Every structure is written in C-alpha cells, then in structure tokens.
Length: 330
Image (cartoon, rainbow, N blue to C red):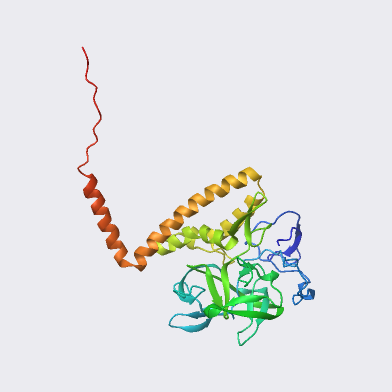
C-alpha cells in the first residue's frame, strides 16, 4: 500500500527532507534513502489480513545484484551479469527460456532495503523489493512482496511450490528489474513477475473508479509494455523506449508509473474514458506484437503472409466498382 505520508531524503542534500501529504509522484530523479523502522515489524506473523501496512515507499521494484537467474547456454548467473538479449528461465512450461528484451531498472551503485524470503528446501533466499509481485498458490494473480507471510506457498521453478519459512529485511547493493517477453522470471528458484504494484489503491487487481476489475495488475502492465517489446523486437533505436535516466530507470517505464498515479487522481468518468482508450491502443499494439513475434519465430509464417497478400491482391485487382447511372427520361 502506497503511504501518503512519506519522509525521504534527497541525494543532493542529506539534510533536506520533505513530507508528501498526497499520493506521491514517481519521480526517480531523486533517490530515496528510507527513514523507517520496518525492522521492528513482524513479517513472520501469520495474524495479518494480507495487506501491506509497512511499505508504501516509492521505489523502482527490483532484485539485488546477488540474486541469480538461469541463463540459456550460460547457466546460473548473478543479476549483475544479466544482459539484454539473454534468455532466462521463466514460468513458461512450454518454452521456459524467454528473452530479456530490456531492463525497467538497472543500477549498480546504490543500495536498497530488500525483503529476504527464505523458503523450504535448498533454494537460496530471495532478495526482492517490497512492491515487486510474487505468485502465491492461493491467489488468482501475483501479489506484493510485503504482503507475503511465513507459511504462504510460492510458485517455484519447474512448476513446483515452496513454502515460506522466514522473512527478513536486508540492505543490499544493486537494483535490477529485467523485463521478459512473458512477464515472469525465475529468481533464486522462485517465480516472480517482471512487474511491480503500480497502484496506490489496489494491489492484486486493477481498480478503476472504485470498481475492482477482474484483470490483474501484472496483465495490465504487460499490455502497457507491448509498445516497448515491439520497439525492441523491431530494432528501433528510440531513446524514449530504450533509454534510461540517471538512476537507471527506463524512460517509458517511468512515464507509465507516473501516468498510472495521475489517472488514480482523476474523477470516475475520466478514469473509465482513459482506461477504455488505453485498452484499445495497447490491445492493438499487442496484436501487432503477436504478428511480429510469429514472423520472427516462425519464418514460414512470413511466407504464408506474403502468399496470402498475393492471393488477396490477385482476387481484387480486376474488380471494378460500377455505379448505376440513371437514364434521363424525356
């Protein structure tokens, strides 16, 4: 849950603090040094309604530099060595290795407070930011990390499950948020979404005008990022889509985060109007993405598409449109 009363410190002047009295804007030109007492919270307690009562600090949503992923032809590598163009293991059981097409956030020089989640078995502890989304066995969609409690069962690699045994807070260097083509990534053996909670009001499903829709936040973000995937797929060199600001945030991603919070501050009618336009535009982009993906991954599809185009052209080239002409009656 995004806290509407946050104290943070700007990197330019550690003595300069401001208090935000309204829903905070995602402004990554400032890096936040958390002033909180979250280490005193009982993350291991099961007596909780599942909502976040501790979080709310604006961050990019990432994994630490020591978190590991399994890369095709490279094996298990730390997040700091992951590169755009690598294929990593995701939750996709039919095609487990999916392309890392971009980083929503990639920064090596700064530290962040992470949740360190221990699970049963021999899996490494997962270090993940509080607003990042994880898949829990009894939930329809992914949920915020800071809503996870000991005893929750998480989705794990190879279509298995692993129960949470302990949760800690640690401060670790590095902020990495790889984006994959299917929107998931297996990190330290645990299935995570590539995305974060972007709403100040709802945390699992999308809420528009106070109405909770049966669409997960992960799904709606996946649609939003379709233009970014198409741009990367087509090799378009665009600073807006591929560039990052000084803090390592992708410009298109940052725009989306700010846009999402702006929408939540508008009236109900405007929210629904914007959401309808949003679905129309992103769905069109997603269909374009599917066609491009089919052509790239299945060369035969390009031949079929070309053949179909020739057939359609041949069928219509001799068609003449005739308009009836009324004869003049004397």
